[in-house]
Length: 267
Image 1: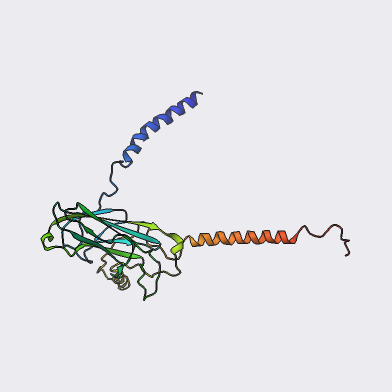
Image 2 (image 1 turned 30 degrees about the vertical axis):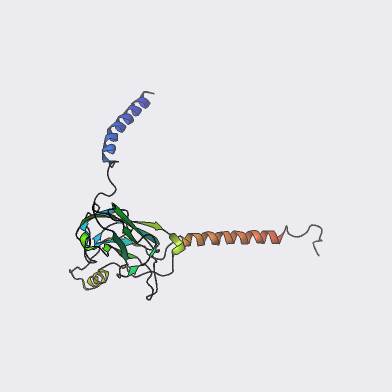
């Protein structure tokens, strides 16, 4: 009993000593998820500010400027781009538009959402949304399907009255994706994602040169998908197992109980 009491006391003291260290190492609940998010935007495709999905990027600009951001999107994802522009206190009616381009700088159509919206005179803000089509792992060369790689966001005002040019505005951009899964999977995969500078990087690896011309370093948290795996394989395996069980059950039912008992052995 004494040995047990001593061991319990030692374990309790050890727990009290470790608890503060664990508490100090835990992240603060007040920490913002958007810490480190960009606070400026690029002015062209080459200078687009890189953001990750789930971040809320902000930027101060003037009416009439072109604002650019870039983000990674992988196969099976359906990205949703949301932009909010806070307008000055006094302004005329303005039309704002958000466009999304893929790694080949092809403009991608929005599946649904208010891609273009007109803000009434003296309104406080305007909100835009663009839901892209599901990113495919592979596509024909003639098609303009969204493919894995870097995507560009361009936010600007169109048909701006001359009196509003140069007025200060604040922009917020956020990208979130829905994982569609195997229902959108296709056979085939790209050799490389459509990321700026990937061709130069491949050539650099072959020539073992120290020069670098890679323009984009962003990628999904778990890396780029290989393109061949999807949950279709899981459902295919489950379907095969169910089909095998159904075959065994059908054979057992059609076979019956065996040789009837009333039939003579030599019959």
